[in-house]
View 1 (cartoon, one colour):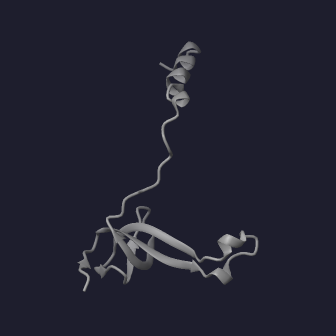
View 2 (cartoon, one colour):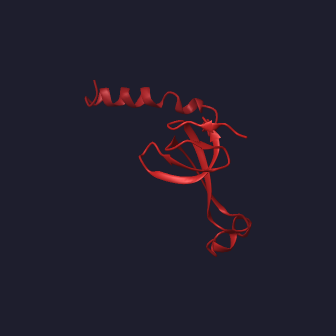
Length: 104
């Protein structure tokens, strides 16, 4: 039996928002074949076990319910490697603004 996850633990829940047959007709066919799934991270509102229904409070204060899927989930998205051409833009803009007397 899975351990009970304590209240206020950072977790992720999942739930199906739309079944495949409920998807909009303009959605591409390959997308329409799968359900629309909500994944949300937040703080557990009451003790729960992995795989069971749980309620969370998001960082924005929203209360959501779904199946508890992960404890202490990491953010796995990224924006790729740095672009060298963009790394100097901030300094260049500040220099231009200084020249125009708009920045100190």
